Length: 231
View (cartoon, helix red, strand yellow):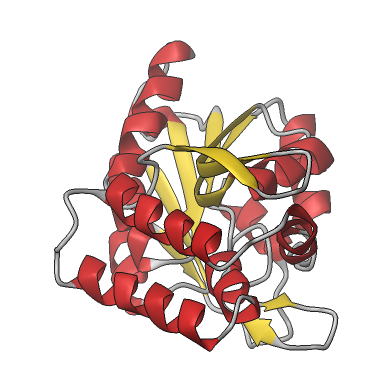
């Protein structure tokens, strides 16, 4: 008999937040990393795309090295805090997210997010949704002129996500079978395999094959509340 779920982990970009970021002119991009690079100009965007190729070809020692390369591009092309905040705050929650978290709290479940993106995004979700734990891959510190002063990077994407998951599971004295995960990307496959129950929320084939359940909704008609029937 399956154990009762007591803790639910979530991805952030594309899962809790919609997959598309928008700027004030209506331009869109699939992630905050990409939209920032596009705002910084064609050369910055080109260099950022080159880092993705390097990652795909396994030219980086790990996720942190990849992020450090990308952060240096942001520094090189003059990223400012006001633009960064604009990008992070430009994306909306998926429809039904706020109602879903209220219901999870009502049921007495603990919640956690593990994000391969910016801490600012994870913090925004944690604050608005009252999430218990939040981990994110990159945090910026700004100087008095709004320029990048320093940064903190953590290996919480791809396989690295599972290390943070295991830490919280252990902290609560639970087993993986008592935990669930909801995600939307190929990089979420290791997490989906690491818990007793996993849900692919409009995810690709690879994630669907690794997950216990798959939700597939038409674009523009997403409703996050559907995950509740499986938890």
